[in-house]
Image (cartoon, helix red, strand yellow):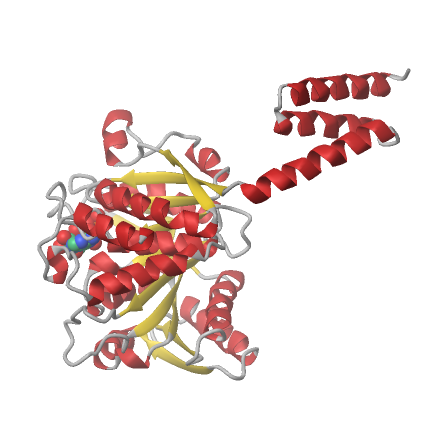
Length: 415
Ligand code: ATP
């Protein structure tokens, strides 16, 4: 018997032992190795096929499990994430699924103890998950660039989460700070570029701390980076009834990066002749978001412009506490990350009054990304709750707690 046949027989024996202990996963793993080493052995092959068939039968009766990494983070992050998880656990069975949550204590508390926001290998740790759910990162006594560059921005770049998707929908029952806006009248989807542009973090200081001190900050716009976010926006617009895309630019004053952006927009737009387009300078766009928000359908913007515009779009549909977002790798090679748009909100931390709906709607986006139609039941529950006299947090004019709102959504889904 050759060495490889002996090894194959050994793996097969281990597989048989695992089968005797009813450990089907270990059995398949071992017998696969024996088949690989000795592909002509019919006994190995038939046993493997039998085991795989049994595994498929079991899989079809078992809920599908998604492994989710949770970084609840700072401030109100843990408060709203607790409710988001409650709602996810109530909704997942509707898609015969369950979530397995793994919590990571990273953020500014970790920074105070360890001098960094997360362990050195945190990106490797996250790589194995199906998705990441994040609460908020930030602390009044730590500069934002430390918290952002120490945790959040590397995740977006390493996992190529080039699309930051931020919907803004005015739910019936919610008052916009703008006059005479009926529920449903504002319904836009902002696609924010998420990996380069003004947040590329390239630059440096010269004569630091001296009277001559100076700083250089460079933006990076690549054809690949611009085209992929713009194309993602057009592809989404093609599935929506209004079929419109607005591009946000500043090419009148930023004569390189933003000119490349405009050229990419024109090139991609030509691939979608049925979609109506407009191009707005950022200063004009902020004005039009207030003056005619109903006219926007899909909006595509660079990292900085998208960041600023989505705080505006969040507030014109009622509250930062309703704004969800997804940082998405459209190729699905890496985990995508879902998080409320709002920050750590230190002014209301610990009071139990943070609105958890942005985090809950971020879970709905995560479910959509994972292909779980239970996302629709979360959307419906939020819509029904907001349109009714159900629990609402103070930012929406109510006096309920974070937990009462989370419970309200979860029990609506369960019923
Ligand atoms: P950070 O530095 O972490 O971004 P911030 O206070 O500058 O924190 P946000 O956390 O976005 O920025 O808060 C902006 C305002 O919106 C605050 O007044 C905050 O209380 C309010 N806010 C943010 N999120 C919520 C929420 N989920 N529910 C209620 N109010 C919120």
